Length: 230
Image (cartoon, rainbow, N blue to C red; front, side):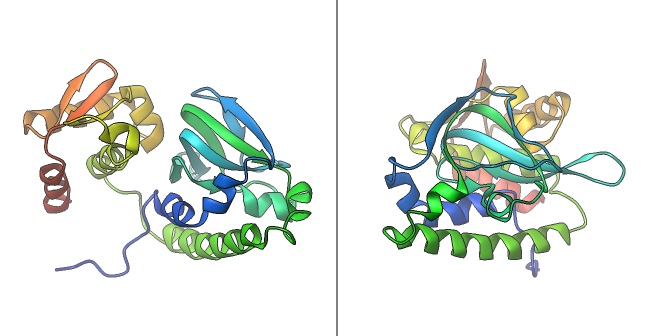
């Protein structure tokens, strides 16, 4: 039986931004470039922050705190994602904590500076409006979900997603150059859970693990495994 009204995945905003961020990617004259390391915090939940960002390379995730103090993985961002624009333009506290989970290069924008360019580059404003509309819908639907996806599903989704990037597609089989710690940070799972899940997948012959790397010899088979066991 097919699921109805599924909870949006942690990649939903990234997917949306990839279809809308082309004007921002091309406008290299705007904002400033920032390079951050894994573990760096971009913004903390509840704090005010003057900037929003375009992620040019690397990975970032955002989390919120549940009432019991645990973290809930809300979103994962990869190259092409735009984030932080809502609170930055509204000058409101950040609803999430955003951290770098793999070395990242970002464009950083101050709303007041960017707004001055909207008359000359209206496509920038149009893309932000469309993206904000999608995110509002996505976040409400996501928070209405009972829980995050199961650990196995989260990890497989991440491996398949990163393996689609151009840098990964240059090699066959597909490779994912992430450590267990990075996979755990991106999926809000412990390293022990990541290692256990990767060993399970390797035992089924779906992946091969090496130091700081996961190889996927047959991506369709891994996808079928996810779909039939979720």
